[in-house]
Image 1: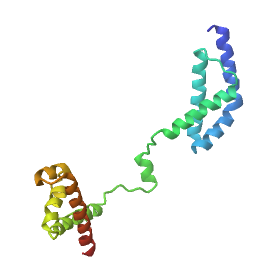
Image 2 (image 1 turned 60 degrees about the vertical axis):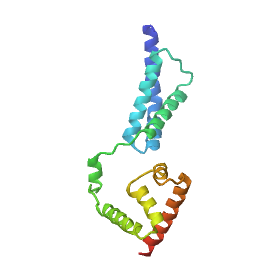
Image 3 (image 1 turned 120 degrees about the horizontal axis):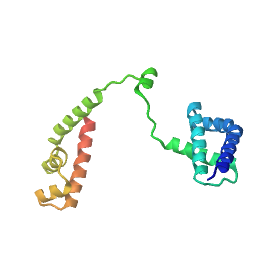
Image 4 (image 1 turned 135 degrees about the vertical axis):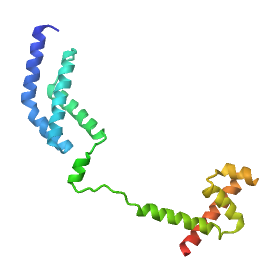
Length: 170
């Protein structure tokens, strides 16, 4: 690329910036709902266009090319994982804390379930203990009990159904 072509490209891009930058800024600010981000996207658009021209790219219709790049940058902006600072959350009234009440309720429900398993028929008690207290898989339970995997699965299902009835009645 010689000096004359560089100068022509610079003039072309300067005119495009003068003609289209304001409209592109409004468009992108509307799309991303933030004026500063919209202006950054417009600047990135012109930087990408300049890089394309420097590499020897040819542009037939400048406005269409610029808006195409801008739309792609807007899409990329939407796909980005939004990072929200803790300071901005604190300004909005967010108070970090840990609510232990839900954990406590889960713990109590688990203890209640363990106690209720003892009131199930013996056939279901052993299967339910193996499955939910010892955390064994259906295959492991079937190997221990000598029953088929399907039989164990049915017994677990029936045991859970009986446990739900007991749990809801208490």
